[in-house]
Image 1: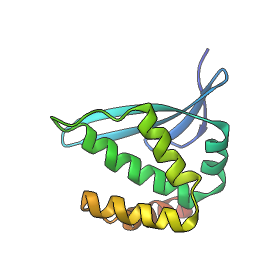
Image 2: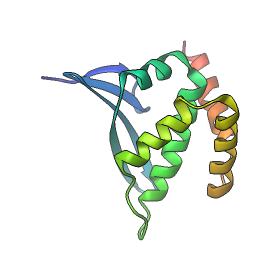
Image 3: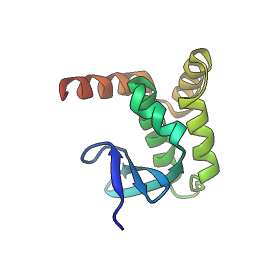
Length: 128
């Protein structure tokens, strides 16, 4: 049985369904090495990803940032449990919590998450 892609085009993060299981996959480049990460998600997560472009973009940028960091020597790999927490924080939190979370991740990783989120939103808007 082949997985069915439910969200995402080309090289961007995507959600696939295989049987009853939903998975969120995203490519992560770090220097000259490429990685692919796949995590299980729930239907409620997919519902938010399909209905809220902003939260979808936030998850994409923060997941990429944290997963890329996890590929560095000496860092531990990102676990399903950590991804579940990330999904809860980005897709299912209040707007105030999400804003504080974005600021925290930006500060801790020396990156402006909002800039990349807006780049993604503009790119998707221009391809519709």
